[in-house]
Length: 107
Image 1 (cartoon, rainbow, N blue to C red):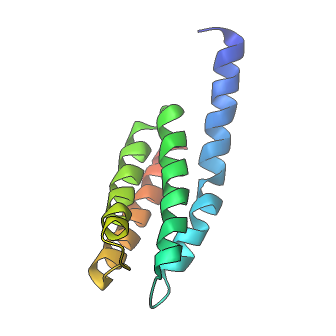
Image 2 (image 1 turned 180 degrees about the vertical axis):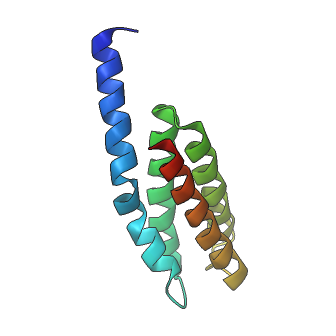
Image 3 (image 1 turned 90 degrees about the horizontal axis):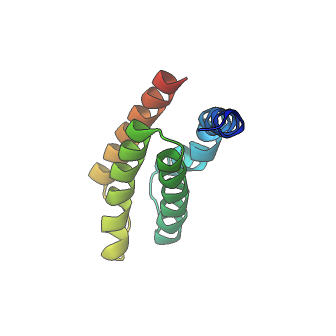
C-alpha cells in the first residue's frame, strides 16, 4: 500500500468516525418519537445502509456488522410494509447505543 493511499485512507477513516454521530442523529431523533411512520423507516434505512457501506469500505468491521444488524431490523418492517413495533424501536435504540460504543472504541 502506498504512503499516499495510506494517508488518504486514514483521513477518510477519521472523517467517517468524526461525522458518524451527526450522520446517525436523524435515526436517534426518529427512534425517540412515540411512533415511526413508514416514510421515516425508508429514511432510516437509507441512512443506516450508507453508514454500513462506508464502515465496511473503510475497514471498520465491527461497526459494519452492528450497522448491518440494525439495518436488518428496519428491512423486516419495510418488507412487511409496516411501521416499527415498540419492541423493534427499543431494539434499534439499544443497537444505536452499541454502534456509538463501537465508534468510541475505534477512535
